Length: 152
Image (cartoon, rainbow, N blue to C red; front, side):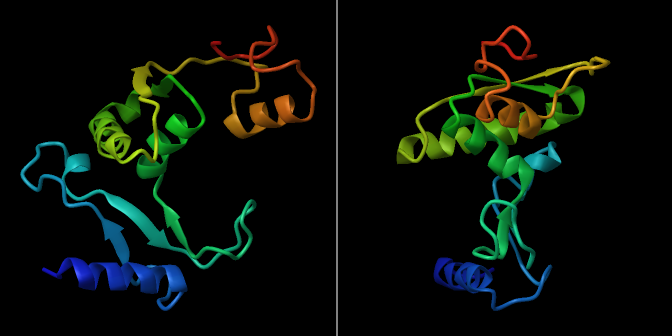
């Protein structure tokens, strides 16, 4: 095992772009004996030298979805994150991430992930990115607009 200092140096090298895609990955060693594989050593950041739609080429490390999902929910003020059943095994890591970050002051919200059976809704926009676009471009009056498939 590496020391904390060595790991921080490697992470800084990842951030600086010193390594090619896939050469290193940042993981959190939580509980290697957990029956839930998502709570053993989940990946947090990966190296990906690719332009991003929001930040361009500023970053070459990106957070994994399971790590960024609860953080984005907390920052955006989401209270309940509704997910399909395949994310049920991921909820303990979602909760762990929130519990570790709230005491640091980096986030203040405590969203909850709730799983449900997939709905087959037709002729309705469900993409978070597309719903944000509808609100930002003024096509709807806001998140509580009755045409939006959201809970407000």
